[in-house]
Image (cartoon, rainbow, N blue to C red; front, side):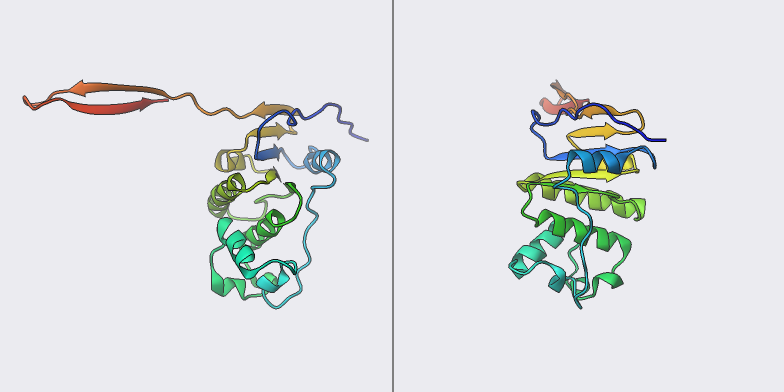
Length: 196
């Protein structure tokens, strides 16, 4: 039985840095990502050098590489000197993301994002990666079966393949107010409160 998807992803008119394609296994996340972003889809990297640093493409400076590694939350120089195969799953994912962000493509699609790592590590990695991507000139699309990524990565849009719904994320509206209070006859002190 073939599955057919009809529709479009209305992201070209959006000002965005991070997107997410989420859904249960078998709902078409990878198929949709490959169809929509064939040139930007990351298919994996080859790792054969004795150190992680030596596995990055030639032509990049050590400063470029170490900055990229630190920006995605992998700031451990002793671990940079290990072969990729000796890293934990969380470290491997962060090295892969650092390499992807150093590619010349403006847009990067990263499949199986946080799929094989502990959720606490995923949380920390998502926050670091989100911050790094937002500072870069890149657009990053995470493809994952883990819905928790949406809260931690804070994407600008989400496509859910469970029901093919599309959601543009909006900043929560903040309502600011202040009031003066007096206690025990002292002069007024201004207290600010934020209501979300």
